[in-house]
Length: 211
Image 1 (cartoon, one colour):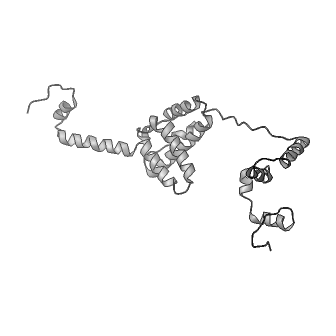
Image 2 (cartoon, rainbow, N blue to C red):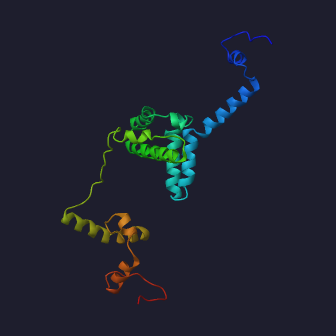
Image 3 (cartoon, helix red, strand yellow):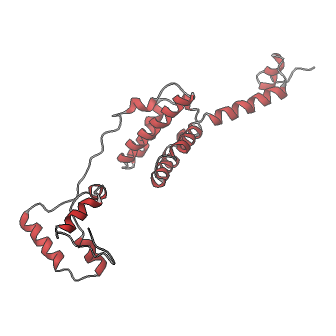
């Protein structure tokens, strides 16, 4: 059997090592499939599938969009076991450079969760994203201006009382509690029933009464 013309080519090396070209091609395809299965994108999607059973659909879609927009284009095809901290930091800095610092911090946390999942499943042994805590400067929280002077609060309440706009807006203003939404969401009906019984709050109940 004649030796291939160029000794430096893969066929020539296979010929020298007595490797069957067909088997070498199959082995290459198997390696490619294995690399794809162990890629960051594949592992992240597997983690997302597992996580999807315990989070709201809105949160799921938000995290998935963050991966697709800011992580997969640069880390997606890389074998997860070969990704190191500098690679991840480059991705985070790219997000931070466009003014999305909150997103950069959130992305680091989500990437770290993917690596912890990968460690559990045996895809890798370390979480390089964990070492990047503090690598991006903290995001500055800004608060909306609020009225804190009693006289101005009274003026605002009188303006609410004199409001003559649409009925839905009037109802919304009357329901304003000036508290955090989550605190109102976590209140129990018993709190309102006690206020109704005391005459402090009236809610029309058609065909029924509050015992």
